[in-house]
Length: 459
Image (cartoon, rainbow, N blue to C red):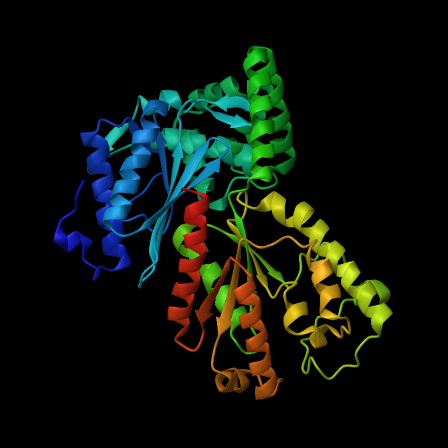
């Protein structure tokens, strides 16, 4: 598949690139006879997604070919493709890492059924038979979309998002009897009646308690109606969760640089871009996982000092014993925090965990932490620390760094830069990002480095 020269030129805006991608996607789906249906209501398709991701149901047999089509179109636009495993299908993320940065996320779901913890409860497969063609693409019937959204929200989120309140009330009032019958097939007569009362009154607040009962009801009904498939489904779900923990979709990223190099500003902008463009969230951390309370907070009865450090080198240094206690305690926090706090949410909730500073700071600037230990002792504790998938070192002119934050003298900034360079040369996964340029250029470079690692991991 080849796009014409105008389509592949590098002068397109993000909106033009997404329009080309979407139109070509639906065109090839039809040419290849892919059985699909867009599973959300979009007013701007096939030219735009209004900043949202694309939910599409695809027949199980057609999913491999559909994924290949996405890859072909993305490659023709010089974009990268990442495939993220999900519970009931997978997400395909398309990202163009040039300037300007653009991308989109496609949720590819099989219409075989929606499950809760492996227990089947909602059958979207029947709704795909009622699909309609609109503006050159197939989509589910609007009423089917709203009903599925209602069930998925109250079961998965334990609430109905406010933007759907009026739409669900309209759907219910159109045919209350049919609405209740559909609910009975999923939750049984008792809970269908309770949901009918909620819709009748239009009172959608405080559904958490009822939602938890609906989850239990789904499991009970699933085991009563299809015990063998339910056992297999729950086993499959358990295995999937274990695999997700053993080999998560997401990555860890450590960002190193002296005060004034722009770490905080850059990390915040990158996180916003990922959320806005690719609909992927990031777990942001400062220095450590924070699984254990800080030593100061533990000694001060839970009172944590959150004030910024004005002069990190002005405080009195600790002796050998206190330094050893300090680094041993925080090594435990790094170890437990990664495996119990960071790892479980990598890929499931967050595509990346980014650390503004990391354990490597003990190598670069141990005086900041008032540590007086031989370097070999610090390196010994470093053996127990989880190694990030990517370490980004920020480079900038020492005078520019000094102007941004005058806490450190220029000789100290240069010393830290030299230490960073030595450390970077010893790491196989280290890259440099220049922060002396515009924030947009630094952000694009930062994103490019992250996506490069994700692409290898999620290809």
